[in-house]
Length: 194
Ligand SMILES: C[S@@+](CC[C@H](N)C(=O)[O-])C[C@H]1O[C@@H](n2cnc3c(N)ncnc32)[C@H](O)[C@@H]1O
Picture 1 (cartoon, rainbow, N blue to C red):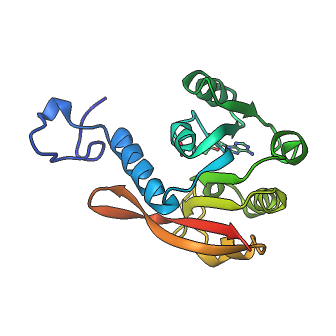
Picture 2: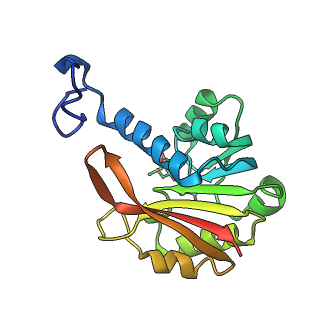
C-alpha cells in the first residue's frame, strides 16, 4: 500500500513515515471509540449488524453484547467475516426479508447498520428499515450518509430515517468522525423503542 496523505492519518507524534497508520485502520479505531461514547456502557444479550461486510465492526459488538450476529449478502465478504469472527453467527442472506425475523432475529435487542443503507435504493432501504422496526430490537444504531449524493451513495436526511422508524425515539445524533480532526457527511443516529 502506498502511504499518501490521503490514506494515512498523518502527523501522529513520533511515528516514522513508514510506520504511519493506514487510514482504514485509524478510521476503525476512531469509529469504535465514537460508538463506545454513544452507547455509553449499554449491554445487550443479542446484537446484530446488517450488511456487516468482512466483519470489521463485529469485535466491537462483542464488547457490548453476549451474542453477536452479522448478516452479509456477498459470499466472499461473508466467508471472511466468519473466519475473522469465529465466535459470532455470520449469516449469508440473499434477500434480507427471507426468514430474517422469524429464524435469525427473534431474540435481537440491538441492531447496527453502518454505511450500509446509504448504498441502497429508497425502496430497498425502506424495506430493510421496516424489517428492523418489526424486530424486537429495543435499540438501533444507524451510521449512514445524511447529506450529498454520489454514484454509490444516497445521502438521506436524519428525518427520513426517523420517519421510517415510527416506533422509536431518536435519542442521540452525532456527526461521524473519520479522522481526529474532521467529521464526514454522515451521522450516527441512536434510536430507542418508545
Ligand atoms: C459499505 S459496506 C459496509 C460494511 C460494514 N458495515 C463496515 O462498515 O465495514 C456495505 C455492505 O452491505 C452489504 N449488503 C448490501 N446489500 C445487502 C443485503 N441486502 N443484505 C445483506 N448485506 C448487504 C454489501 O455486500 C457490503 O458488504
